[in-house]
Length: 306
Image (tube, rainbow, N blue to C red):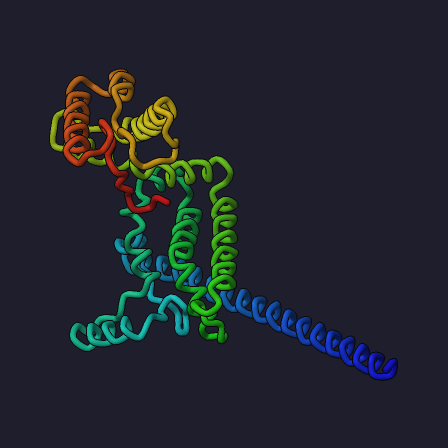
């Protein structure tokens, strides 16, 4: 009986040892695969940066030194940004056959819409041409990070859907690296401006509405007024939420409060303030008509917000 127990115990220990070895080998394979994916993604990112920079330089030379109007960049051969789902590829092939133009990749679309989303930020940062071009490339890279990681992962045999947790880790790591590079490129003060720009998308939308309403009048809103008004609206809206006991991060809050109007009187001309007051009247009527709390409207985020 003792012999049988000894044999069973030995077999159990051997089985545990084998399972531990298998688990360690699996972990090593997973770590190696992750390192290979990150290395491949880094190569794609570097290729995309080179493509964006060389394309901008070529466009400037072709136009006699003037900057490229569209800023579109064609992805390099084999670039991840050109990879797309089968349905998208079919649509792109049809468009290419009909129009003779190349398909629009996610990177090209992101690059083409940069000024729409970030023109005010670029003005505020006042970067050198080289810094600005690098920031634009990084913003495109950030916007297409998930697509790039998915393509690299799929090409390396990692299914993003079946390995969603591991895939999300890779996406988060790529985005953290891009954010760190952005901070390094524009400096601490510039990065603080960048973060504030990201966090005030709803306020910028309201100010853009005011700017458009005043654009054809004798009292247009200038850039300095717009920047100050964005910060004023963010400050007074957050204060209103805190005073009412609501979550400071909630989207349902008055964008233009009575306090905002009072403070804006020292910033805007009487004619400009009258238009802002009309916007508040419409805001309050709209919110009451939809059953929201008085003056509260759902946040409408401008492109470029989080």
